[in-house]
Amino acid sequence: MLRVTWVDGEPPVRVVLTEPGELPETLRERVQATVVLAETIDIGQRRSAKVVVRRDLATNALLSQAVLGRGVRSDDPGVAEQVRAGLARVREQVGLD
Image 1 (tube, rainbow, N blue to C red):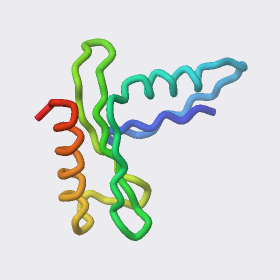
Image 2 (cartoon, one colour; image 1 turned 135 degrees about the vertical axis):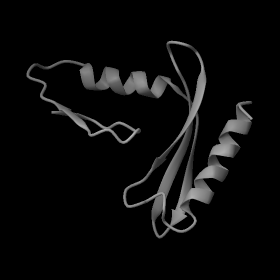
Image 3 (tube, rainbow, N blue to C red; image 1 turned 45 degrees about the vertical axis):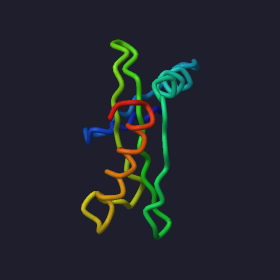
Image 4 (cartoon, one colour; image 1 turned 45 degrees about the horizontal axis):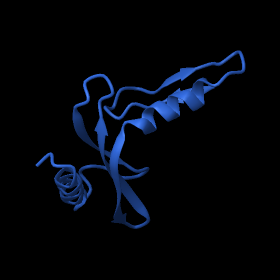
């Protein structure tokens, strides 16, 4: 079973793989190939978020995103501010700001 989780909040997709193959590894490699810069942010209380700059492999454009870790909500105190600051840091490092 392959489970694909989308960062835009869409429901996860589950795909049953009936034959052996390299699809999961290929997908992971493809996703990892888009990462230009990533930083993990310690939110506190053993929670984290990740801010990432990715390259769109079709257009070569750079985009940034934040992925909240398990148990982290964007409306938790201080989270939005920490994530905004993290995004600003990685965007500046790659020349987006």
